[in-house]
Amino acid sequence: IAGITQAPTSQILAAGRRMTLRCTQDMRHNAMYWYRQDLGLGLRLIHYSNTAGTTGKGEVPDGYSVSRANTDDFPLTLASAVPSQTSVYFCASSDLSGGGYEQFFGPGTRLTVL
Amino acid sequence: AQSVSQHNHHVILSEAASLELGCNYSYGGTVNLFWYVQYPGQHLQLLLKYFSGDPLVKGIKGFEAEFIKSKFSFNLRKPSVQWSDTAEYFCAVRGQAGTALIFGKGTTLSVSS
Image 1 (cartoon, each protein chain N blue to C red):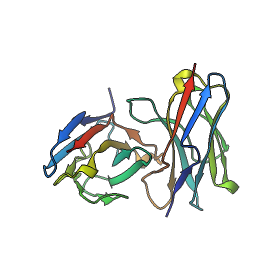
Image 2: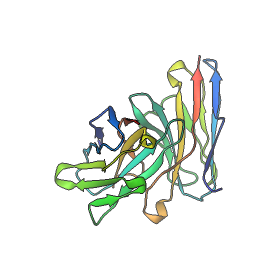
Image 3: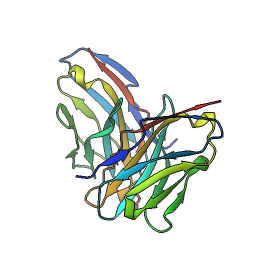
Image 4: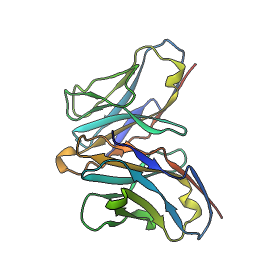
């Protein structure tokens, strides 16, 4: 089934540890995004990539890094996790070539940093 | 900077009641507008979108939204809600400056049967 997969589904992490959240899409979309969802704050953009090999910062990039080595994968790394990074993380993609800009979302990763 | 404001944080309705969720945005140029829905424990799904043309947009599950350019608004409506509409609803906007969407903070809709 075409779509976006994210791993892990959930994770409990000790503060200071490094963690990579994985995101893979099979729709050949050129753009991918990472959001965090927090109660009362909605979705906030962390990083984005409009095409393989390029990335950009969103609204809340501090403490996170991304890479886009190919079209399908867009991992998000927390170099040294802190409790304020406890959140639900959603990966999304869109087909910019079609001009639609509609974003398709993955199932999310629930991360708890203790 | 662009922003999206959703007026209602939590709306509680009985089944068969009519629904209107407000959404205003702050970008003055050409915009693309979206409403997404997130059912409990699930990811976001697109309800409807507006790019151009008829300002009254119809989406899935009986939802519709009206784009009023003069009011910078894109309110979501449904004439008769069902218990299964219980979810969180997000309005989002994309201005021409970028490709990423800016989301509102969301409105939680609770429908009692």
